[in-house]
Image (tube, rainbow, N blue to C red):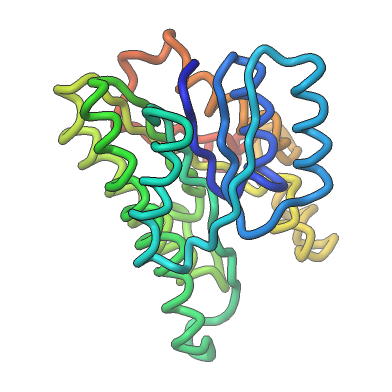
Length: 244
């Protein structure tokens, strides 16, 4: 059974991705700072009905210097890791001119530096197995921009570039690297939008609605499937046509 690490897997989109990959038969290791009731419920469901397996391991990705040792422990416990979903991220909003510098540093640390170091550590396992799949969760604002999200947009644009170049590095070894760029979806990160802003976002999309967590998770599941074995270095958009 292939091991997949999903960061930020305790709630929201990460939890949805865990559910999708488990249903596809993977053994998923959900990584987050703390457990949640939703994740505990999913683990209980998995014991009864799914073909895959689910585990939770607590880790704070802000501690970038400890990532390599954390991954070493995962490999010792679960064996080779051949899948990674870099989903954990910080969505701090604010006008750049008034944003605190430590907030910007935190955005870059969690949204760019941490996933790059985590990927570096896990890729070593994929290299020895000569197989693997990496999916980075990006955002449509990495290319469209959005007022008040300049810092966040910059970090997601960085992950797009990371995705494309890493795909070139790892492609000869049969390892795929892709990104999924959701539009505004129904998660805690969009609950802060005012009703007026939500309506504006919906009107702007071709389908006149917001994508659901399940829509984005399904795209991640597809990229982990055999049907996507020749897809790498791409950024797949799931936004109900907001960027059409």
